[in-house]
Image 1 (cartoon, rainbow, N blue to C red):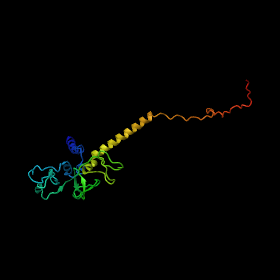
Image 2: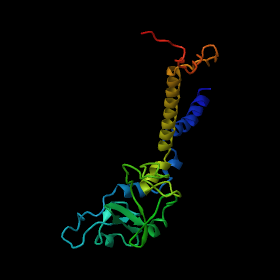
Image 3: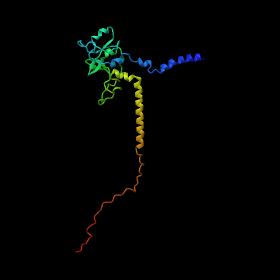
Length: 224
């Protein structure tokens, strides 16, 4: 009996350990491994390996190595690798749709046309105050968007599709609904009751006096 119990425990423990492990394999594999390092990389800085070379600005990234930004001189060590080029627009990093859509699903991310090329932004660009008449905004940073899009950048899509963000949104909605309900109850408790309708009485209405008439002077005699 002791041997059978020991074998049964050995069979159960791995299952429990896998359940308590935190993230599921599907959640970890939803995005390629190079995407988050790409979004965290600083581009358009001088290459630390080719400081003496001309045009050593780092605006390349190797998807196979994911070892930081690369300059044009670094590409000789990444032959036959999948390298993409990062561009800039208003001090923000962008990438052409023709490059990124080959390796990543960018559905729901708003695209922009810059220098006759359609691009997407890598990271979020918070907007302090949406413009008037805006009906659709990014669900992460609240930047105004066209009606057919949900995110303003790749980084916002990663944050918006994560399970953690979904749980946070559900908690926020529950908190807002509870707050609104409590506010409604407080407002109803402090509102004065509606007074009963008054009964209209004709007796309480004062009748207006008639028009006064002056006494005639013909019948008055004055003695001197």
